[in-house]
Length: 369
Image (cartoon, rainbow, N blue to C red; front, side):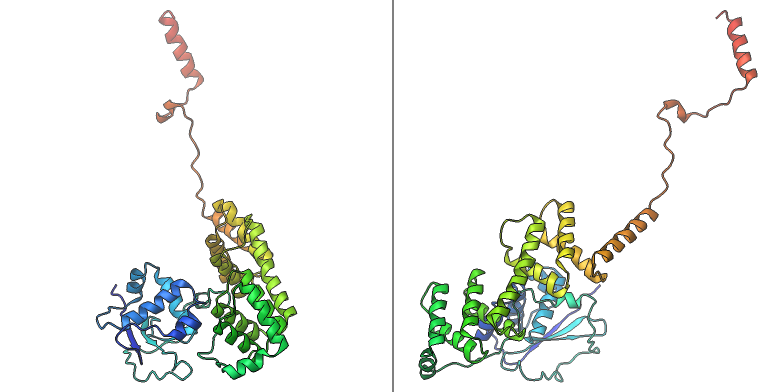
């Protein structure tokens, strides 16, 4: 079968591969590394006219699966950094790179030539494919206000801000940099975080070994989006996630904090699949019985199957198990009766009458036996 070729369109990107600073500062820190590679490769492909682009070619070049490439493309379209055009067969025909300064405007695709009708339908796995694999992934503003020296002086004279900055310095274990100060003032002025919430934000991020301002900003934007505007609400939200992590650790018998990829799996199970801890624990238990190790990828396959089959509780799992057992028993072939191991069974067996036995006895007597 001939591979579907994809045309790549962009506006405002030069012949050399240029990575916008806004992408590095705002989008790259919270994105999965594999997704970042796909976006960078798209930029690279646009800089060459002889790039024979297809999902297969991207997957081969990045040593990844085609499904992973599609996930990455769906992710960047959700972040509004690309626009995907598909044909009636739901195949990607065009990828339009959206520069960050045109991100907030409506994309005019009238100049994109596509011989087939654009389809907005998605495959049945699209809800899963478009999962942001980072725990904190939100749409960030392309730019945010930069405070002047006068404004910084004015705000830092506030005792609350001054104390918060002092505590943040302790958490970061270094003097504050200008970008740190800009972020703290943004949290206070624009997101209306209290000094207590700002201090807990840094405490929470540093406890996860995350000191990058971009990551801290992403968490803050997530909290603001979710209506977390007090320290109490923030602590409650983070405790809930810690409970999920602890339950999985207990089920898998792990005596350590989950790693980044493992946290991404757990977040997917909780936020996207909306599974309760008992269902997640059941999947972990079955994973251990099957693989004899804490395999998060295997557990994810179990939970993804349950999600697609509409599992909501333990009763639904029991029902699936019963249906599986019935289907398995029906598929069994009736076994052939096992023959005796006697080597003479390969010959036809005769049936003897009383007269036959009498004749044999008479012959033996005549022979003097």
